[in-house]
Amino acid sequence: MIIDAHCDVLLKIWERNISFFDSEELQVNYVNWKKSPVKVQCFAIFVPEEVPEERQFHSALEMVNIFYKKIIDPYPDIKMIRSKEDILSLKEQEKGAILTLEGCHSIGRDISKMETFIQLGVKAVGLTWNQSNAVADGILEKRGAGVSSFGEEIIDLLNKAKVWTDLSHISYKGFFDAVELADYPMASHSNAKKLASHPRNLDDRQIHKLIEKNGWIGVTFEPDFIKDGPNPSYKDVFYHIDYFLQMGAEKCLGFGSDFDGTTGPTLRLNNQLDYDYLLDGLPHFCSREQIEYITHRNFIEKFPD
Ligand SMILES: [Zn+2]
Image 1 (cartoon, helix red, strand yellow):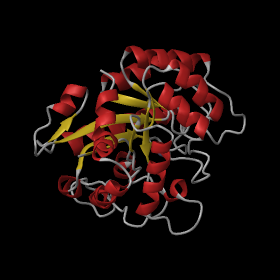
Image 2: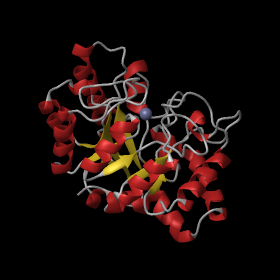
Image 3: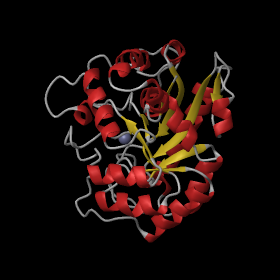
C-alpha cells in the first residue's frame, strides 16, 4: 500500500479537458490507479502563473470542481479523504483521494479564500510555488524573503484547521520561518540536495529540521530532482531513500511522485503502476518495518486530525 502526496492531474484535466477514466495523457488515471499499489493519492490544485491575478481564485475553484465531478462523484470506489479515520476505514477495493493546494497565489491577500479551500476539503497547503506571493517568496524569487505577516496568519489558520503546511517550493528563508510556525510541516515532493542539486531539493539542514519538527517528506520522481546527470532511473530513487534514512528520516519519509507535473521521463516511473518496481527494490535498501513506514504509515500517523 502506497500513499502518494502529490500529482498534477487536476491541472492537466483543466488544461486539456481529458477523461480521468483512462486517458493515456495522464500518468494517474482511474484504470491504472485501480491496478496499482497506490491506495491514497493527493490531487493538487495548481493555478499556472500565466492566469491573470483576478482569474486565479476562479481557476482554482474550477479545479476543485474537476476533483469532485471527475474523480470523486463518478466512482463509488474512490473516497474523499478528510481525516485519518477516512484512510483507515478504506475497504479492500477502495481508493482514497485527498485535495491539496499548491501555492497560495490564488487567494491573493484574502484569508477568507483560504477558509473556503479548507471548507472544500483541502488538507495540505503549499505556501508558494516558485514565485513570490503575499504569503512568502518561492524558491526561484531572487529576493529570497521569508514568510510575511499575512503568511503567519495563514499558517496559524492551517494549524487551527489541522491542515498540513507544505514547504516544497518555498524560499530557503521561508522554509525556516514556516517550519517553526507550522504544527504540521511537510515537503510533499522534494528530494535530497546532496544527490541532486536542484534548488527545490532539501539540504541537510532542512532535512534535520523537518525530522526535528516531526514533519513529513515525499520523495519525488521528477528527473531533475533525482539526478544531475543524464538518464535518471527508478534505481536513483533508492539512493535518495537510503540517504534520507541515513539522515534519520525513517519516521518522516514517504512518496510524492509529482506524476502529471514532471518535465521529463524517469526510467520505469511512468505511472502509478510503476510503484511496483520500487516495491520490488525497496527490500534491498530497507527493513520490512521501514518499508511499511515509508510507503504509508508515516503519512497516516502524521495526518493532521
Ligand atoms: Zn510542485
